[in-house]
Amino acid sequence: MTTDWIALEKKLYMGSRRQPIVIVRGEGTRVWDEHGREYLDFTAGWAVNSLGHCHPAVVKAIQEQAATLTQTSNQFYTIPQLKLAELLVKHTGLDRIFFGNSGAEANEGAVKLARKYGKQHRNGAYEVISANNSFHGRTLAMVAATGNPHYQESFVPMPEGFLQVPFNDIEAIKLATTPKTCAVLLEPVQGEGGVNIPSQDYLRQVRQWCDQQGLLLILDEVQTGMGRLGTLFGFQAFGVKPDVLTLAKGLGGGVPIGAFLAQERCAVLVPGDHGTTLGGNPLICAAALAASSWLIEHNVPDHARRMGERLMNGLKAVQRRFPKEIKDVRGMGLLQAVETHRELSSAIVSASNAEALLLNPTRPTIVRFMPPLTVTEQEVDTALVRFERAFAKAVAA
Ligand SMILES: *Cc1c(COP(=O)(O)O)cnc(C)c1O
Image 1 (cartoon, protein in one colour):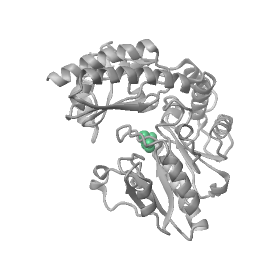
Image 2: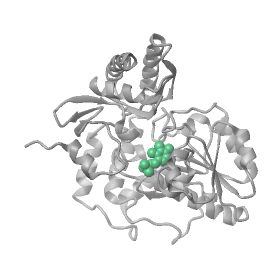
Image 3: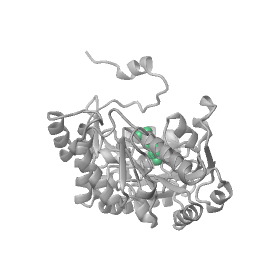
Image 4: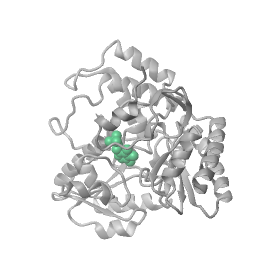
């Protein structure tokens, strides 16, 4: 007997929006649906499966750790968590770390840290400046930090202490800074907001301003971190060092994890300030350690940069063939987007589903490409052919 999973979902869930595909298996850049149909996955679990689906190093680490020790609570020391902490501290150049379960949680922790820092070092300052079109997660405080009124409307009143300014505008940050400000929270490249890339000196100017004013610079690299932009961390591509860095998505290679790291001078959290039951448990950290070590040892960010150039060249060629429809092609590394003049995203993604290419319609006019960082040249080329066919269909419909 076959089950109609899509009908079952419609009956059981609230607030979900999915493509009509039931994915049952994945390997590398490919996934298979319940009917055995194969797709190229250029969504990668929303920039999570950086080594692709079921990478052997990650599978092995999960299997071994599952049979050894999965959860202890943070009342005790565990070795996978400490090894992962050591790796991340070393490669970020930051000093201290805290593990949670998700990106939103990582950002929450970072904001708690910033508020405590403001109390101690800036006369009780607590306000966090973030950017329009940003995305920082779905908890109440992170919805307040997220610069998208649509995500806030149904849930007002918002927690206090957050305000947004235009992205890529240093003067706007300067104007919004008051004695109440404790931190600036930014994505180096805005992901969910449509792959918005700031000018090369923006983050350096923000860094300078934060130093002058005694504000913390929190970089949300939940999406851009762990190689997505073609460097291990996005901040390296922009020549700045944050005070606080948040990571999640790609860090676990497919398992739920988040982390925030801080420089010593602002690592103000003490025992009792913050905590988590499952955050950084041995199972998750073993997987994240395997994924992160493999990614670093095999120089995957550099591969991502090269594959990103190939994808970008291909998308620009499509743009040249559809100059009236495609407004912009942009991206860094393997975080890229095609922006159209008309609201074509849904139509493009439906058509690309039919062409066996999975994409993400992040805005009505913006389709996002974020394949595994291990994607091959041939897979990029195949995806481009499928995308162009899907695009032509969507435009003609
Ligand atoms: C996805 C995302 C988040 C939220 O992460 P969750 O794991 O869904 O809580 C936060 N910030 C950025 C930049 C993201 O892309």
